[in-house]
Amino acid sequence: MDLDALVRARQAEWDRLEVLSRKRRLTGAEIDELIERYQSAATDLSAVASAAGRTPVSEHLSMVLSRARLRFASARSNPLEAVARFFVAQLPAALYRIRWLCLAVAVAFIGVAVLSAVWASSTPELLRALGSQADIESYAKEEFVAYYSEHSEGAFTSLVWTNNAWIAAQCIAFGIIGVYPVYVLLSNAQGLGLSAAIMAEHDRLDVFFQYISPHGQLEMYAIFVAGAAGLMVFWSWIAPGARTRGQALAEEGRAMFAIVVGLVVALLVSGIIEGFVTRQDWPWPIKTGIGTLALAAFLTYQWWLGRIAYRAGQTGDLEDFDAGAKRLIAG
Image 1 (cartoon, one colour):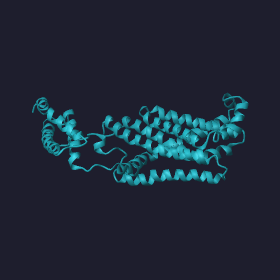
Image 2 (spheres, rainbow, N blue to C red; image 1 turned 60 degrees about the vertical axis):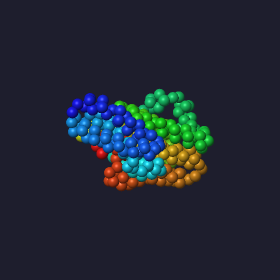
Image 3 (cartoon, helix red, strand yellow; image 1 turned 180 degrees about the vertical axis):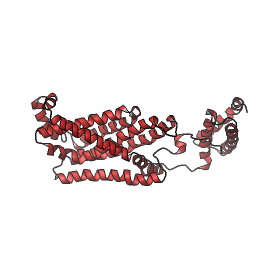
């Protein structure tokens, strides 16, 4: 079969089928025409697939047929059902798939933070290099605590939420290069360790943990998840397995970037805790307990609900039609 000749002969009919499948409203005559052209194009696709195998022409025609079939063979999806499916199945499954990598990132982060704190505490020259003695003392005794109350509750919540969500999104979006998530995690771990060393130098390490523990549990774990997701995207094209590198990168990129939505919600919760709870004159066990409950809820979502969704066959990727053609469809 001459594929080029078939394309020249049928292209106008395929284009008309695509136009009909994209129209918001169809008349009775147009619906009849849609079905007729669908049947004809399905026959053409079978002939192309048999003669030439997988080609750009067959893949394009396959997608046109898929879209057309949805117009007369599928009910219009409910947006609320799609939202529910995302939060109940797709997102937790994506989080579950990187659960062990999240823990590995957490261990590495905490290890770097502890080493940085020990190194700074045992190296007076390093602490002096961070600023004058007066500045460091002011940070430890005033600025560290004042940071949590220098803005109103709402403004401070918005500030920390948008900043952390932007960092998380960048970790995943630039995860393809592998370096950026590592850089973000290392720089934040070192900064946390240096802050702890400064507070310890002035006998205020207890204040340090009291003020970061309410919001910091969920906030830091969300950053661990972002770093793990970014590294997963990077690894997908380094070791794609049985898939092509393009296919692996597309599938993992879609699944991991869905995690951004979950992290935006999680970081909003941690931002609310940081803006409205940390500054309150409540007993510290209560404030820390609120943060622990928030982290426990996220871990339950990731490990328990994620396990259920993953065992049901979810990976976090889009449905076949939304993700694009993966195989030839004849009818």
